[in-house]
Amino acid sequence: MPYIKVGHFDAVVNTVGFCEYANFTEMTEAQWLTTIMSKMMGQINLVRIGQEILPTVARLP
Image 1 (cartoon, one colour):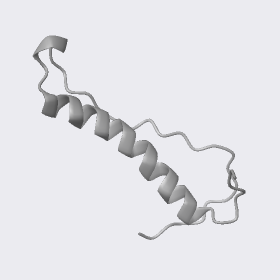
Image 2 (cartoon, rainbow, N blue to C red; image 1 turned 90 degrees about the horizontal axis):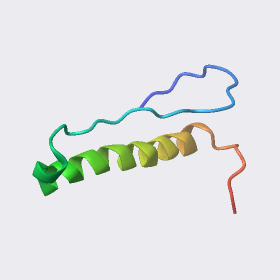
Image 3 (tube, rainbow, N blue to C red; image 1 turned 120 degrees about the horizontal axis):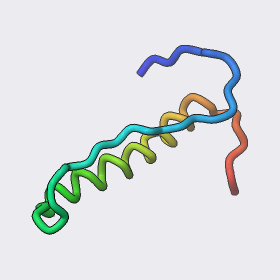
Image 4 (cartoon, rainbow, N blue to C red; image 1 turned 45 degrees about the vertical axis):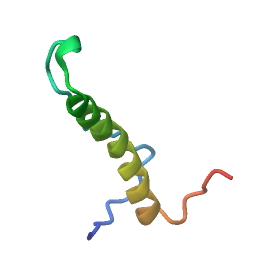
């Protein structure tokens, strides 16, 4: 995946995600998993990409 150098930045905010809209008691397990995984994997993928782009940033021990 190609990346473009954009200069200095102090923070990255990931606001992507979605939710299946249905009554709480009527949502299927598949709908719950889709909603949860979209939000969780969005955060994980952001960190993965950040590690590729910012290899010189200090990492937590």
